[in-house]
Structures are given as C-alpha cells and as structure tokens.
Amino acid sequence: MPSKGERPRILEHIRNGMRPGAAAEFIGLTRHDIFDAIDTDGVFAAEVAEAEREATEHVEEALYQAAVSGNVTACRMWLDLRKPKKVAMVPAAGAPVEADFDQELAELNNLARGD
Image (cartoon, rainbow, N blue to C red; front, side, top):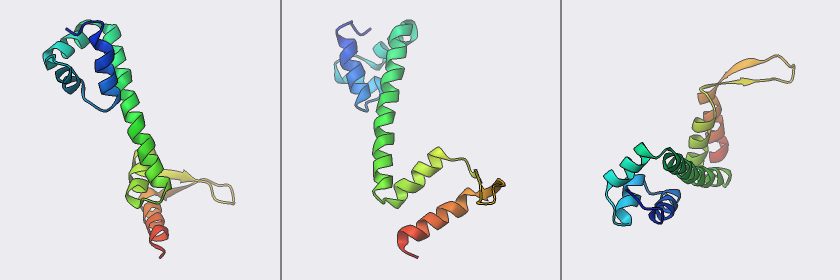
C-alpha cells in the first residue's frame, strides 16, 4: 500500500500521463500495491480518477491546439470525439435539417487541401 508520503508522488506521475500501475512501479511499489489501495480507500480512488482526468484534459488540449493550427488529422479526431455521426444544422430559413457528419468532414478536408 502506498504511504501518505508516496501518494502525492504517484498522483503527480498519473497527472503526467503514467498509468497507475506504472506510477507505482516507478516509485518502487508493485502494481498490486496501488490497485489494493484503490480498492480499499475510496478517497485515494477518487484522487487517482481525478489525476487520470487531468492527464486526459492535457491531451485533449494538445489535440485541440493541433486542430486549430491546421492539422487535418487532429481536426478529424477532434470532431469525431466531439460530434455525433449526425449533427443538426439550422439553415438560414430557420428550419432544422439533418446533415451527414461524414459529408462535413469531407468538406473540411477539401478546404484544408485547398480544393
């Protein structure tokens, strides 16, 4: 089980992208140590989950920055993660219509390529 002093170090490694088991091994514990602590200590389990969310947010922010800088692959990934396959569009006339998400991606790709 991680000690009170080891827990902040583990959480910091997780925030920086390590998986919990790898973070435990990095500071000299076993994977079993951290998973036992997660299973038996609800507060620590919540802290680990929050640290993992923070790591994911860092990646999402980097993906977003790549997308807005013109990286077409990042644009596609961002849209795939953020929008459903069908999106509602409101035309100038005001009546909602269904639009195909794949068609929108194709149009974005054409714009990015200069077609």
